[in-house]
Length: 350
Image 1 (tube, rainbow, N blue to C red):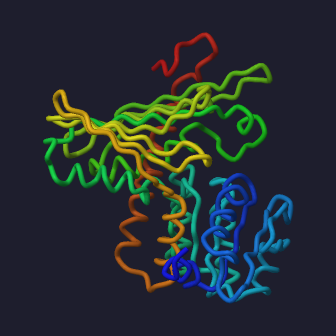
Image 2: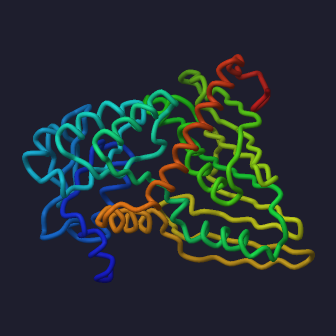
């Protein structure tokens, strides 16, 4: 890592990770320690806590604490970035407790909240305590997304007409073992909505559906998959589909322009960090593959931002995630009025 990279992580002196599930222990902590050996300035370790157990199985350089109060006694909350990696349903209560203990700078796992009511609570806490939020959004930080935005901006392929996103993976084990994500709208789709909003502009919900996850153990309503359709004010339409029973992994976004198409594949696993981009115009197709470690880039950018005074960009980015919650909440409300699909019904029937 370069000095600029380690300085970005070290700009805020300490790191506190809350939630030691897949996000906290499996992603945030390993990436932070990889960015810089100790992940914080002056050799100070990361502190970590799991509200459900009080502590967890942690790697070297990470110290477990049993509570927010113990963490606040062990470091200066004002000079700490808190990574909130708990399920979104518990977010507002933990933020209230953390704010009362003096913590002000946060990296929040997506989505910010699961419904409009919880989002309003978080917004009130943000205003009351002058909290600063950076929402985990590796797709927005991805070099691939930057290239897609450049293609949209330069207009060489004409007007953007449609976006299709496929986010597929098998999620049987986690859905059976955990209860942190109540619907398929809370798993993969929150990654993609901010991207399509950034590429195609503001949008309104047109249609939405979800389906049951079915396996030999039991059926889990609403966690088999989700689909939503957005109409963007600029004229484009987006369709986002997530199948959480798929035997294969896919993170693909396809942009249809008046004079061509762009197909982009984000990395789908930890074993390979390369993205792929194919631009097709007429009978000509150009393909490129390139390294795109988006989550590492996101964390470096988040610490760089939180280590400086707040600016308007922070509010604009947070507004994008608020809009994501609004659209997801509306999609869930619409789906709740339709009977949940059974095994015998076709996928995503409306």
